[in-house]
Image (cartoon, rainbow over all chains, first blue to last red):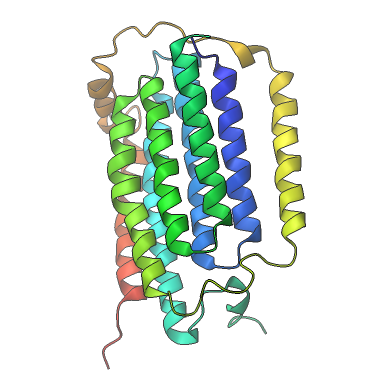
Length: 102
Length: 170
């Protein structure tokens, strides 16, 4: 059997890769991809805790469903914002998005 | 080492290499394709965890919708971000340092925790899982409110995306 620690370590590594992408990439779409990696690693954690700690309950799966829905809404709005900014500024670099700067 | 553990390690290596490629590859389309491979690896883990329903949702929602949306967005914005020039900002070492420190902190918390190496308990009824989840999502004393909030969020997100990205007619 696979111990719980393997899933947790895997999810931690994937979360840190996603965080690196969010912090470092210049392209705004690549930043959103990093956020997707982080949300996926959190989902693995939720399902693994459900399976190993309380397989009789349903809370872990319900939370994972909510995370799925939030991820879908987040990526739809985020990509729409990036496309809209691209129409106005012809740029998807996160540093160039300074229209609200005073 | 059992066959299951060997399969776990192989999938882990493929998924993590794909994940690193997502954040490091210069071409955004390649990043999106690596993202699809990463999401497939995570779907395999849902199968390992006896949550086959989530593996199906992962393939349909993440790979079928979100990854395709990423590919469309990178095609729509392709001209500006050519494959030349640096893809990372000047403080990339600081980002790597923060990620490594976070990883070390997570591992430090895990090794001090009692239940870190527990193995999985037997699953009572694996066949009635999906109907149990479906009933829990619509029964008022369990998860009806978060479920309805998620649907309102999805509708609001869809309307907002259409409004923000749609062409403005004069």
